[in-house]
Image (cartoon, rainbow, N blue to C red; front, top):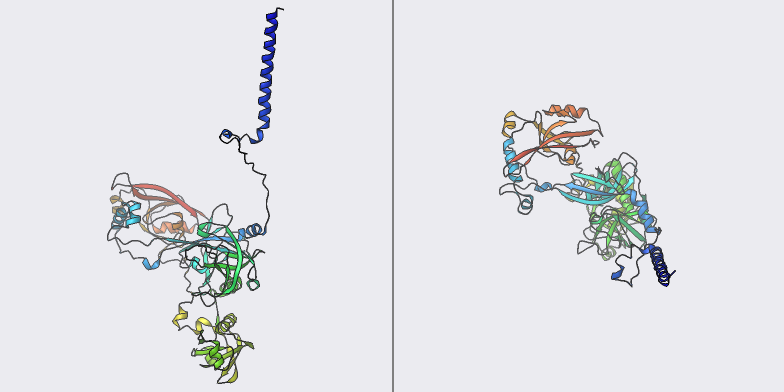
Length: 538
């Protein structure tokens, strides 16, 4: 072998060795950087930065997360729809042609202009639907829910969504009863299965400094949990009703929390979140909850009588009577009677004006609020013994407690407080019990005028507020062509189909709706299918 051949062979060997070493280095480098490969992309931008490593999932257990999980199945979120009745205007009777022309004039105006400038001059603005929201909590497996009265007050439709329900389904709720004086309402839903009620605590055991957890939907943000402490108990607020004495808390409470539970560290409900003290409209560290003991009394009365029944003996007194006045009259405590309702319990028992009521069933009365609290909690028909001072002499009188609203039925102050039940689901005259619509057959001249070519159909003349028809999207002036494939030409045809339907039955409406065309003034007919399941009658 020549010198040159030997040199060529050594160079080839050295080159091959270099290639192998380079390949090995690449493999080793790849293995060494596998754990941070993803993070290392773009590492040239910050070569001295250390990639962030996400640790394995591990559950951190604490009392607040336990409470949130415990209460989740029992807290519900409430939406209430209503149209302000005071602004509603009655439409003058008009022919079908006039109604269609009015609708076309209004629909011809683009929505943004209607929103900012209203309907055409001279056309009355229809009352717009408003929506409120709040929270509630299940207290009975059969679907009974406690919430605030102001959450459902005057609602045409009340819908409830269960916390944690992945189906996002809402259920129509019925008002069982309410009490404006404590701002408590009881509603009921039927979901077809037992619900999980909350665990009720004893609000008399609540102390300042105890942990407090509020659960609700502030600003519509469902399943929000906030924590704080009990800041005060027995708060009397200016403007609050006579029976409202609140638990004060610094757990964040905002609009939408109303009606939700305030719970203690054991997950027991101790109050109903009712109001906040604020200058901005939002949380400022002061919230108020009605003690659950008072709410329980209201609930028990409502499910038994339909309303809150409170006892009364039929007297009035001055809340501002000072201890100095009492001392001047020779007493340290008591209630000075300023008036006696004629024919009321006190009048029948011989109690008179200027008497000083000193004790109830042997227990001294601190003031008028103390008297009212005890009498209100006494069952109607029960008898109490009242010790009184009349001109320096002590007397005892047996008084039979009567229903407060009956005792003061002629007093306008109490007439305003008496609950007036108006169920939004009550049937209205002339509407369908199952669908909630008014109908009329289609006249031949109307069909020609509107170029209507369907073989069948009845026109919707009205849609009842909160009805099944409204929920599935049926509108006034829609033409119902068929129901569950059965053609309809009259209200009698619709009734026949209704008679075959049961609660939970699926209903498919074949609808024809007149809609604006592409050209100005042009209208076209659009085919729609709307449907749902027949709701349970309330």
